[in-house]
Image (cartoon, rainbow, N blue to C red; front, side):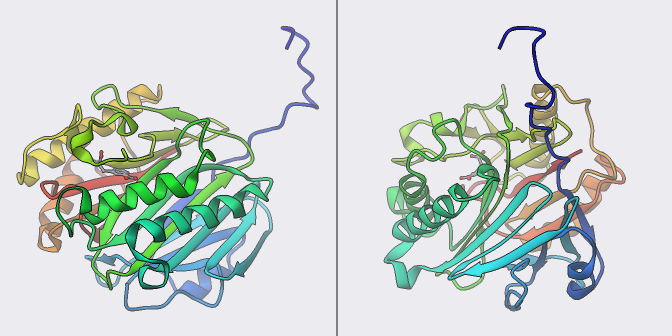
Length: 329
Ligand code: 3EB
């Protein structure tokens, strides 16, 4: 475009990011609130709701009662179901979620492929077709040896199912093992009308460049995504990985410190000021649920006032005990 000739009427205005918060409330109350795009519960024994916007994640909160996670957008929201897929759209955003049973789709690899194939076909038919952020919850993620480990099979199937849909670059993502029935695969995503800006961590090898030792297909995700209005950073699952190696094997405190250093490095890499605050919710995944009080104490000291949601789940490398994802507004 010739400089100085930009027509403001042609330029698409980037939409305000969905507002993510943790709430102690009833699901129904949150679903009735204005602009509710999605409500997440964290109790694997509870089914997802009749309302397509209510997803029960297969990971258990370490807190009782557990808070709900709320996504709110500007403007009216429409929603629906299409087979195994639930979706909602409003304010220029699209939420889509799928849950598949591995026993019906021929194992971990084939089920991941199917989930990504269905999701990308669905998203491609919408105005909000730029997938910015994905969450993957996989049963028994560390079962199986070598290349047969379920996480590595998932990575192969994910790559096969997305095909060249993410040719412009991968979304930010989280992949965590849940402790519910191992055949349940849950994948959900946020897509927008415009692409975001991918952020990598200079302290870490980009996941899609991990060497062969981590599996035949490297993980397909960006470390973080700046949303189109540049108002928000969506942060991928972040752990004590330095270079491509896991640091501080089986040392929880040291892994937590390394993870916080990685989060700081991501903020710097995104040109955002340092630190997290009361508007920047973080989700903490713990391999051992019994570590929850210690981790909560440590994080409350290090990140005072930051909303935390602690979940009991397995990290995709056996030696990792903690992983953190979240939003920085
Ligand atoms: C890591 O840094 C930790 O496979 O989608 C973090 C975030 C991790 C996302 C994924 C995996 C994924 O490699 C693991």
